[in-house]
Image (cartoon, rainbow, N blue to C red; front, side, top):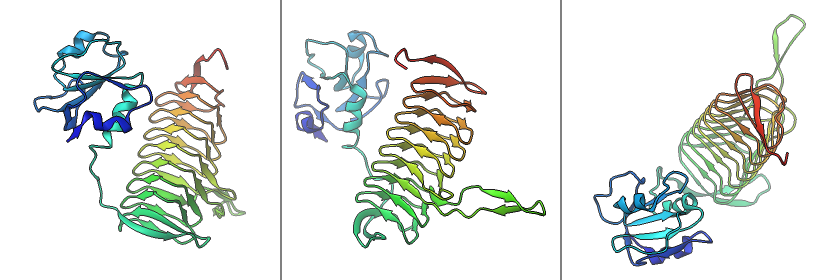
Length: 299
């Protein structure tokens, strides 16, 4: 249970309260959810709910919205902000319960320094792995040698970081001969890696994942890929070897990117797109094979 006025430290920069700031909040629910219990909070964006009347009909006690309202109502309180979804995201952590019990531990890094991390007893971390403070590693995850993980990262269950990439050459007899993978994986700060995701080590240099990259479940990132900061990679996306992804890129579910392709900053790759050519910055590509359907005038 929280008192609304006590949540001000978690407000986004332009948020303010319209109405009673002493309301009690006990849970968060979708706008169309069940608010039969008192103390419910929700959010409503003007892009989806275009009238104040819809807000009035919602039985939630507190509604976060970007609709322009000027008068409070007796039965509810509004939090007005230009970023209602960000605001509910900040509040959501106040109601979250741990999904797994992770043990605090001191991790010894290859340089002898100590990091404070949280790790499941069912995770496996090999020697010669650097892990930054505050990182959380869930059950079933495996981190191979030669991996570097930044601060405040999250590795969800059963992700595998640093396994060999898929690299073979035919020998004189026509048999496949394995290429030893001598690189590692370098992961920046505040990176989240979903359950069942695999990131391969580089062949000779590191596979690199930049700061604040968010990776969904069941993603495959092959050897030598480079991913720029703030990029989001959604479920079942596959990046073949040596793909270069810029900053703030969105890769939609089930997209596939051919080896050696470059995707520019702020590009958008549509659902199930198969990318076989370089993607320009700020462009939108969709289809099989992927084709540009629009491009920012600034690009």
